[in-house]
Length: 201
Ligand code: AMP
Image: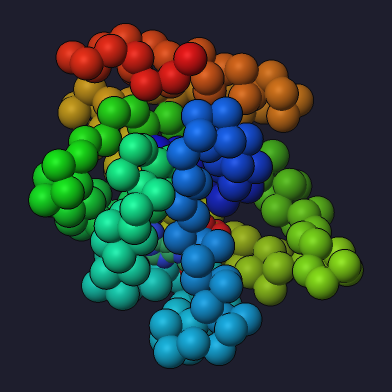
């Protein structure tokens, strides 16, 4: 699982790492955005929270992830990006994985200082239907609020996973390829700690 504040580069790294490991990247932000553009019921329920930079309520988010993890492509492993984001989500994830006979092997925390995050997020543009646009929730006021939500609700997961001995922190400043190498190295080290051997490499 990738843990880290908005703008740390989780989405970028999740795609690359998942590709290398041959597992699906499961990004709750991407699933929500797809549902918002598709105007599904889930999307309509999530949109207001997302636009405000708030977390979508746990019951909606957890049910969505449970369904996703039960899909056949996640049986051989998966990479979580942007989930869990609260201690309650982490507890429910642990229970769901237990039911599925899976375990979380490794949590990588991508560390970037806050000034750099603000710079990255306010300058970020995403490609939508051939055009580069700013995400509504990357507007300056919303960015500040999302970082506050991260500090209050998500950052405590760092200590939680540390006490579960699953956490590795990596410096997430540098070139994309450099950060991928740091992440892959950290994942291999997690794999070596598993009773059934390495997860990566
Ligand atoms: P992201 O692309 O990961 O920054 O997610 C965009 C938005 O989707 C967040 O600001 C939240 O509104 C919502 N979201 C994504 N993941 C979660 C989650 N695990 N729990 C609650 N809301 C989430």
